[in-house]
Structure formats: structure tokens, C-alpha cells
Image 1 (cartoon, rainbow, N blue to C red):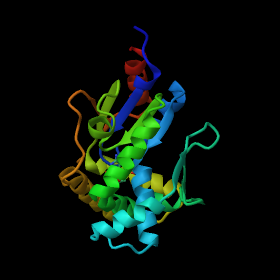
Image 2 (cartoon, helix red, strand yellow):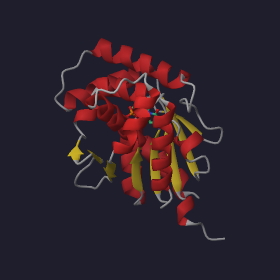
Image 3 (cartoon, rainbow, N blue to C red):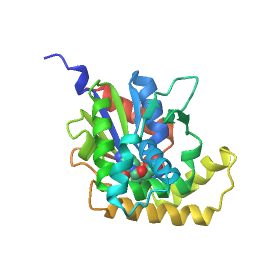
Image 4 (cartoon, rainbow, N blue to C red):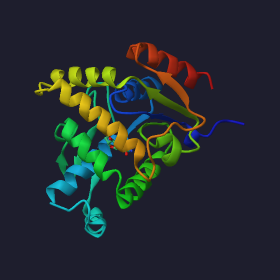
Length: 228
Ligand code: DC
């Protein structure tokens, strides 16, 4: 039976700094699929709630604010190189990429109403099929029936080193020790939260990227997807 387009979803989960974003972008471009950066969505919600001065411990206030969120992701193109994130008409791509915004995203991602809201949005985007979804729970919760699932891991020191290089390339000031501490803290928070924690789906292929460059991992993943 011919494969239905809507079944054609690739999920890539794993901790921060493991290479998910670069790999997802490259894989999506190579396959002609849409890149769904779910982490950018949690970061955008963090920024949105922070700008409104919402108390993140007040579930009702968070729930009341969410209908006012108008969030759009514009897919990666060869020219842009990165996904464009627009919140209520404002392009926030650069604002949300700092380690501090990563910590804030991790915090808001533990709020049940935020997870429900974003999971629904992600599933609606996924309905069109031909998606490379990247995050923490895309293979377990968002797209449990995805056709191809990958789980990436690498040592925290190596992930922090990559993050430092990325931030330096963006021209940001970096404290390497602080980046390592934040990496370890975020792993702990993402793995220990009650809802949709960072977890390898049983049927995901595990790839340790510690000693592999992006091109090698990308070739490996492409071979799996093109293999059927
Ligand atoms: O991938 P990232 O660093 O941009 O993600 C930022 C935070 O968002 C991450 O620490 C946890 C949260 N997140 C999540 O809980 N579920 C996802 N599917 C993606 C991100």
C-alpha cells in the first residue's frame, strides 16, 4: 500500500546542545520536509509570558494569557538558514536564543496548560505531513505514531562546548562554566518534570553524537529515512 504523506513525520528528541537543531534543519532541507522547532515555541511562550509579567506559578493567569498568543513559525529556507519565529506580529528569533531564554522555556514547559496548548498546535502543524519535528517529547507525546524517530545524546561537557561555540558565533558574550552549569540544570529539569519529560521513545533510534560530526549523523539519519 502506498505510504500516506501524513504519516511522513520524523521526530528528533534529546537534551539541549546535542545537535538537534542543525540536524533537523539539514534533514528537513534534504528531504524537502518542513522543520518544526518545538523548542522555539516554548521559548516564544516564555518571552510572551515574561513580557506580560505573568506569574509563572499562577496557573490560572497563564491559562488566561494563552489565548492572546499569536505564534507563527516560518519554515527554514536555503537563504534564511533558520526558522523565523513571530509572536503577535513581532519577529523574536534572536531574542529567544539566549541560554537565559532556554532556562525560561524549560520552566514554562513544565506548566500543564502551556504543554497542552503547544502540543495541540504542533499536532495541527503535523497533520499536513512531511515534517521533521525536533524537541523533547516529539516522539513520545506529540507524534507517537511518527514513521521515523531518533533520540540523540552526547556528554554534557561536549554539549556545553558546542553551545559556547554557537553563542560566540552569534557575537554573544559567554561564560563557559555558566553554560555547562545551565546545561546540567536544564537536563535535570527537562528529565524530571511530571508531564512529558525528556525521554527516549521505545521505538526511537539512539545516536550518540559525542564523537560524530553533524554531516556524519545527518548522512546516517538520511539513510534510515530514505531506506523506508
Ligand atoms: O530545544 P530548546 O533548547 O530550544 O528548548 C528549550 C526548552 O523548551 C527546553 O529546555 C525544554 C522545553 N521543550 C520542551 O519541554 N518540549 C519540547 N518538545 C521542546 C522544548
